[in-house]
Image 1: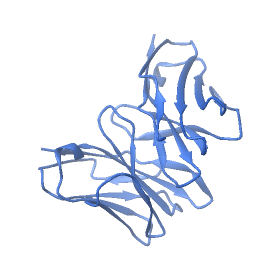
Image 2: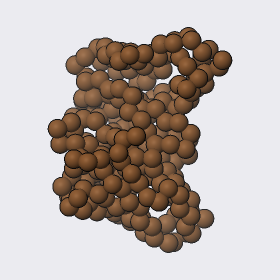
Image 3: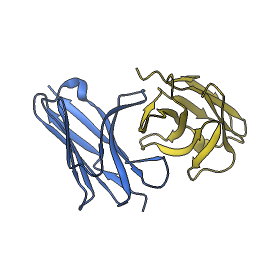
Image 4: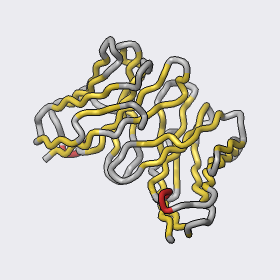
Amino acid sequence: ETGVTQSPTHLIKTRGQQVTLRCSSQSGHNTVSWYQQALGQGPQFIFQYYREEENGRGNFPPRFSGLQFPNYSSELNVNALELDDSALYLCASSSPTSTETQYFGPGTRLLVL
Amino acid sequence: GEDVEQSLFLSVREGDSSVINCTYTDSSSTYLYWYKQEPGAGLQLLTYIFSNMDMKQDQRLTVLLNKKDKHLSLRIADTQTGDSAIYFCADRRAAGNKLTFGGGTRVLVKP
């Protein structure tokens, strides 16, 4: 157990809808990163939040957005869902004293129909 | 380049050693990682190595890094059935905080 929690565990949406995924980082961790893992592939970096500001973004369109709250928990929002957005969404947290290590949560599996 | 490459599959007998290989392209990689993913689960950090090291040992795990060839390997000694999983290598570049992952190696341990 890493202490990183995500909700919900599973979600089914239809094309065009919007979704919000949530992540609670490990205690004391002020950096949260989000990754998308399509079936059979490695995770792809979406973006990272540090002290409530976006701190790096991967090759994902603007309809992928995020927030980080003062308690360092985070949300990933995806608008105008597409079938290809079906994936496992993982968040990872890291601490200010050990920024080289990212600890992952169990993920949210999103299915877009 | 962005690429981190791994072989797709490895089959090994219980009790033998497993060696999983990975190559990366970016010479600015500062840290290299091995993560384990079991079915339906998130990623478990197994070990990582700083780019100025060439070896790191942690119990049954040995990481070897050849920075000249941009080659990383993970050796699991005395492989057990519980080691059956997908193993991902990843690197972190000097510019930025993201991890770039390979496609994963599925390891099957046969009794």
